[in-house]
Image (cartoon, rainbow, N blue to C red):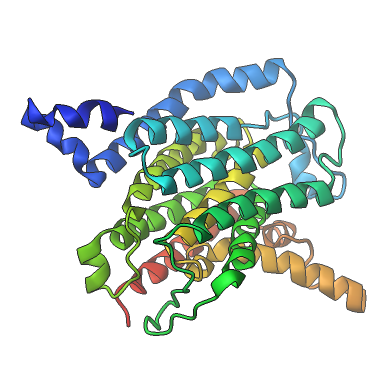
Length: 358
């Protein structure tokens, strides 16, 4: 909005020419998102407390979590506002990729809202039935995938980290592949959201990584130099990713141990869905395995736990996802959180190195 209002004025005053630069608008998207979340946060937390929208702790969870019962949840509302407002203010709203990213936030956020509403307001412990939840996620991802597939300039070729000359073309199969990436990322972030600040930290790291990836992918000169698939207009997603960084930092202020608010499914599902969508648009789908490596580890720990118990009646971990395993081993919650953040940062740095490595 500001881009469309102020940039045209550069013909009268050259200072407004700064609005053409994506780096400038990304930086201010970060700042705007941070300010919005910090300002609205206290009011939202008080409102959630007044409406008695608190976290329900399952009986089979770690005993140390009992003290968290009643902590306000659905704080993801704050994150969504913190992402959408700066994106609409600073991004080029004629860019289709920006609107697909916005759609991912709204659609997956709506699914998360419905689930949290049933759990916290209607007091239905099971929330939205898994089959319905999964079906809605697939529908949202299908919409994004089909739109991308039919864009004339969009390619269905994959980019393989470390092997830039290997670019398999999936053709129409790219649609189910994109659905798998987006829905998988959404649920992976959701599984990771089990400790104070555990999920939002790696989300910020992933958003930072894809801020760089989208910028260089959409920049013709950088893309050619790095031998990346050039996606015209993808650089505008750097503004969206910047908003994710700012909103994440602002939310972390309230979600840091001991948390004053939890994001709930209304936060974790859209964050994962948005990261998956950005990965698809920027043609760095497989890189998400590294960028979001921590989310992959958490998800695999659940898969291995379930498979092992069904096949052998034995558990691989004391509890899954794996962060609960370390809790039951006696690790303090802050230690688990910080060490998992370190892992996320290391994996993100490794993923960024693939942009140069051939």
